Length: 121
Image (cartoon, rainbow, N blue to C red; front, side, top):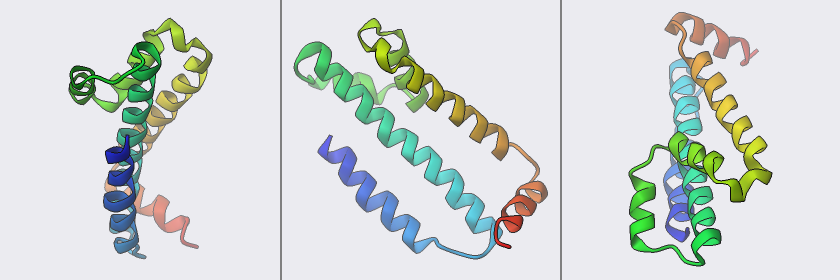
């Protein structure tokens, strides 16, 4: 968990502060990376916390298992675990929001530039 948090603080936050730009192309790239990195870090944290709750430890094998899953696969794994049914609604919402993000980003570049430019005004 400490390594994941350190990754978030150093890699993601430093990158974002250096990439602040008024140019739409840079803003679009930053926006895409920000969402992907957040999902990567948080899904890893959720997975490891869930494993700890189930096993009272996180073995090297379970950590390796986590690295073989994509961020969305980690969240889907949580949805299959009945122990965590109290958070299934929130996990489903995260997956839905990520799907919406992917749909928004799957537009022609001109449309994305237009969208990001309209938010600058």
